Length: 264
Image (cartoon, rainbow, N blue to C red; front, side, top):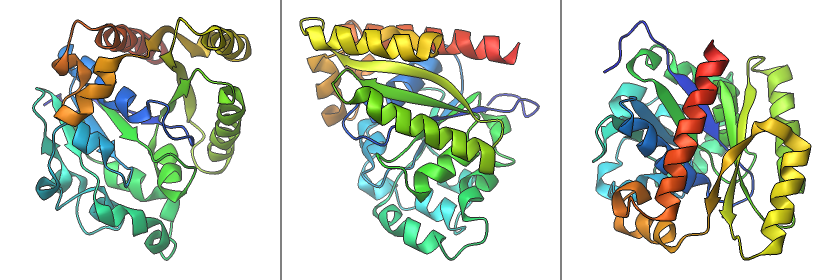
């Protein structure tokens, strides 16, 4: 593990719209980071549990999960499990997580549950990536309050800008009310189809609006990326030479460079 004097950077991977490559981005970015000898933790905060499935973690291994961490029945350390990737660990999701939002309403400081659970555990990791549910609910709010920064995967489609503008307003509200240090780490364009003029137009519009907050790396539509989760593997393990895997390696390089600049 990393030295205890170091504190992990916590990045929430969030978009209130589903099907934009959020979980795919979280697990493949984490895998690429781990390949550079970073120690990485993924927290699966989505009741669907796709990040857990995509990393090959079966249901029987999820008895202690992010639900138990949020409601205080388990510590973060008790819920962490190793993945097949050296340096990459996971706090899995569980079916109970879908009801956590209702239960959390009864708690004091309910927006801070995840942040407080992470306190004292960050020295073990270089990066913590939180895979958020596809909605702006209390689970996502917990992730945003716990995070240093937000990464937004954005599908190259017609309504993309409208959705991300709403999320950016939410980030600003969270910054003002709960987490003044929260920043937009970056926007990653996903499911880019170079044969489709709309993808080019959306990419250009997003870059015009957000400038250098948009990563240069674009994640293409790629069959191998879509197939990999059904095999319980990140695409970097499933087919490292496909265009999708190469794109995520490039994205990880960009993210780590941006992180070095932010810490400088």
